[in-house]
Image 1: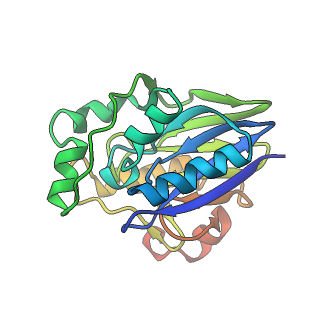
Image 2 (image 1 turned 90 degrees about the vertical axis):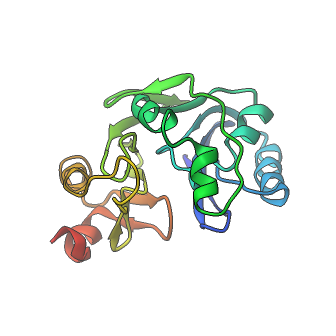
Length: 213
């Protein structure tokens, strides 16, 4: 059975997911900001006796990476990100982004695992498919697991909303194209785990998300 533990971290209320099965785990969006949040994450993983296999960011925005330096160091793992993160990292890096919004965040380690559309990540016998869903950011990805019917959408799709496109690399038409061709084509019963806010389903967003009408 696949377990998904949700932590809501930092003042911008980012969902950090610990996905685990048979003592193997993936951390998605390591957003723990202060020592207390870092301790929450560390204690959960230790209490569950998990071996962290991957640390993945859904896109290269500072609020989703506030704890990247901590998590990569603690579990001695590289950061995984879509290969197009380089278009932000060179011009609007995490530290610069955070100062722009009034925070102070250390730059994460340079991603060493570069993901592309249709890549897969294995967690025991579960297979996670990487869907490149740009629009909120050039490097935005969603992470889909077919067997359990879940998709982690970062800041691409929310319950009743979609990601902003006024930041560097954002594009409204590209965002809508990503959602319509990569996410709304998934089975309607697929559970959506977004980067902020509560869970939803593909069917619910098809029916009620006014941004997609």
